[in-house]
Image (tube, rainbow, N blue to C red; front, top):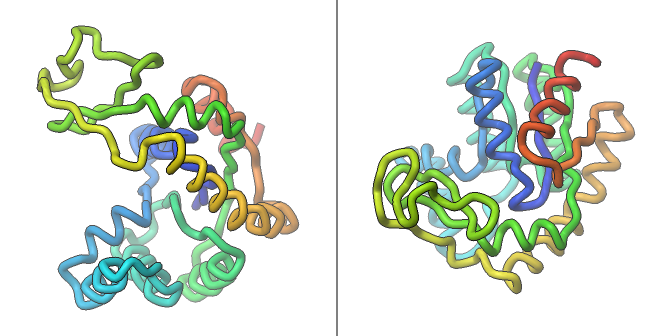
Length: 213
């Protein structure tokens, strides 16, 4: 079963995708990761040049990068995270999956209130060494300024993890994604989980969807 996960930044999609990779053998296909992995190829260089100009990677280039990745993973089930973002991209993805003889199982939407998302994102930081995630109030290191996982003492914050930038990202997400949600709902692919719940509850909701309960 192949999945698409939809949700605004900070909704917890990456965490759940990692759990599905570990527990159920999925391959997470994140657009950011795929673009970084493709940088040594001609297609990746083309995409990087476009991004360096501050422009969005065209749909046909992104679809080809995904196509190459699908060839690479073979028959293993995948989770698409970050693509599609528009109905046009969804239609292009449909055509690609049909060409590759792959079927979509579910589109899982992480539904969460914008106010909660802003609170989540503004306080998050990561270990500069291993990437373990933390939060000013929700998840602090057990020992102050020491990473629980690797013991490093350097931490970083994303420059766009501030309220103004987050609200702009959310506005763009809602504008782009509303038609996409209707598109998949109309084709009976859409399933909704409560993204405001703790990650174990969200994990259980996703498991119920995948197990057909």
